[in-house]
Length: 276
Image 1 (cartoon, one colour):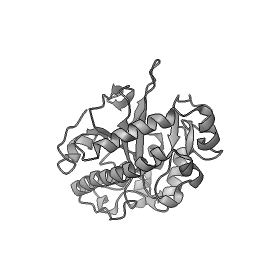
Image 2 (cartoon, rainbow, N blue to C red; image 1 turned 60 degrees about the vertical axis):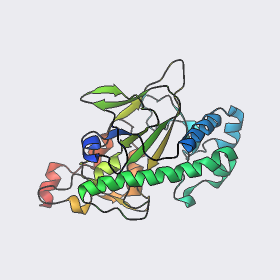
Image 3 (tube, rainbow, N blue to C red; image 1 turned 30 degrees about the vertical axis):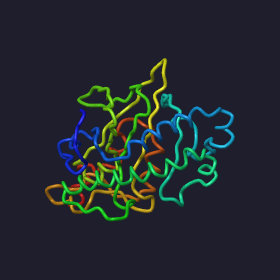
Image 4 (cartoon, helix red, strand yellow; image 1 turned 90 degrees about the horizontal axis):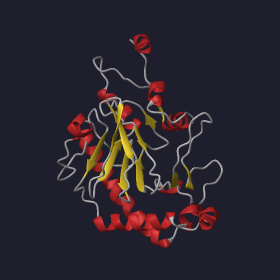
């Protein structure tokens, strides 16, 4: 499942992510010392005393940002065992000033640089995918781009698994690699050409697994739907088009199980016949 590449430019996006939705990227050009700095500072952030976390950095009611547990809204769903720290970085006006200012200075400074590195990396990946599909991605880093998760493993504890051919395959992170997941919104935008991947994390009973997940998602005031240039009589739209706000509202209101939400917004065959 691992993909080795000398550069993002040379990345074979069709072979690596087409029908898989997952790959590992090495020699990505990101600043190695900055990555190591982020690993160290994130470990320090999680090691803060619980009293300090709850006083300054804990999630507030109705908001997932800050320290807390994996968010699950269904009372019937088995709870996932995962502590997290969630921080919305872009666009800047969506940041929570009280939360960002409460972060240790040693963490605030490298996270800005890390964000810039990964934003550039995400755009380069998306540009290669767009080029393969003859699409155009605008210069605004938040427009028409979404559905990428860039995962950095902080320690060497394994636990990530992806679903393939009905089974779960463990992912062994390559040294200095980013794990790239294609998300549901990118599957929708590419009309299922680049599918998302189901994944889960298993728990190590003796050691914690720590990772940094950076999500590159559609802007909240935009829309999510198949790209018009990919739609034709031979390849009709497979998903409905909706506002990003409605998409995320529906996504987080449902039980987090597999790719079930995609089936909700999928255009059924009888709907296609009505539109013809």
